[in-house]
Image (cartoon, rainbow, N blue to C red; front, top):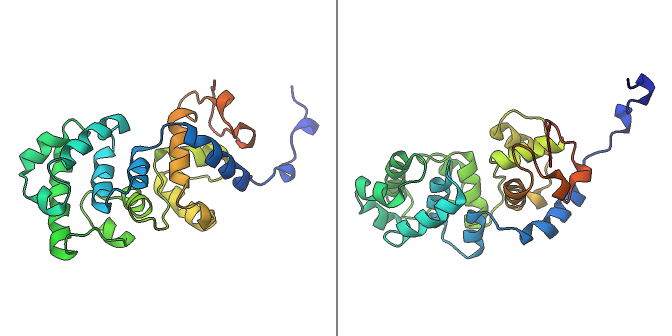
Length: 230
């Protein structure tokens, strides 16, 4: 039995070494396959393509989105071209991404709004993006960061899980994590945190049995909620 005197003193708990962790991830994560939307942003994809691909990627693996998005863009890569397609045509083009029927409907409605209200251009304001059908905070922030290079904190399930696993935040859902990060994450990391943590989450910091033995920042992680690792 562990003696009370042997327990760590809470006062000795060191602050999370964020700068060191982010520098290490910035140096190591480029060796892994990058998230699709970040790849597109790095290749100069238009904000409309970023917006559409992000919507397609919801509840869908990047490997599938990487096949479906180019198939759609080969036929329609502007709001006007997409709106010229029927809902049935869009549905067929984006099958079998998750919720493809709902997404087809949303994409046509988004195209209509962009043409009527924004001269066919994707807005670069968070509130305007959130007002578009099917666009939540994750999508809106990713469009800002990957599509426009503007400050935003895109929190998906990877970012939410890893920040809590580190012990850097204590939140119950991605939206709450975003609000905490907006308050305490230095703005120098806003553009990169999603790309780095999604890469880490896809390859090493898995939801179940993370590969802690391979993690370059394992020494800094509190492993909150981790019961089994590799």
